[in-house]
Length: 353
Image (cartoon, rainbow, N blue to C red; front, top):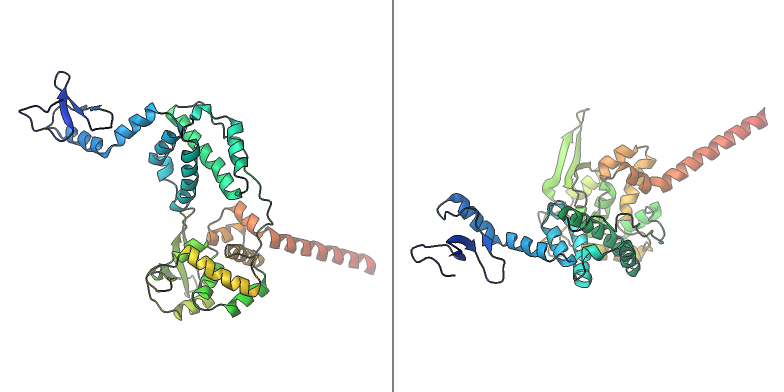
């Protein structure tokens, strides 16, 4: 396997077997060039692809059809590339776990009961257990696409149902208590989450340049903020209430992000923001209401104000079904109140008659 004496072939390129050009690098499969003319552009395109190592990796995966190879193939696929960064972060935890503990197993050996056992073993970590089912279902779909298996053993495996109390919106008295106790970043974060109805990470990502006013039909100006939701990838423009606009105008701009770390040298981290808010929650006795519950509060306030599911979803970026789930507590109260009022009115009419 020596290079031709009269040719100056690129690195890892050899003539062998009746002068046929191959790409060979130590520890990797040998690849034959489709274009056998080193002076042609197609040859150099193939060479660049071989240097990247992707064809060799795909060959290795096709030879070794275990879960580790399936996970590697999935990460290289469009299925994985098309998910959001937030979702990928959650998936990666499961993928690392599956590769570590089950990487040696064959997808063809998995059965429905194996997926159920995987879920049950992790049931103490409720969210992680459900992600295990969801991710392995996607992996087996990918294995089907590759032709490794002909069925998906996780297709009908149900997710665990939460046994914890349902998340509720913040009560009015605790919202006022927080506003009284908090200052600075803790107060601004609270007000931004409550006013916009967005997840905490989406609020932490907001920049001063995202604030954009529009002209309403009556000629008045409405200040809002542009954002792209991390979880859904949805592009939204959310109007800001006047009190928040005033608070923002009184906030010193120290960085491109509105909410910064303690040194104002970068954005405020999720962990740091959560810990800061928790201190205030403990102070006012609101440990049962986390910062994500403010998203519920925003949806419920809009529902009480008479907004439709579609209108609420236009602000929060939620589907109609999710909006209904978030607002069911206040809507149940409103429906029950109207029912009792109607009943009392009917009974009063009977008595008067």
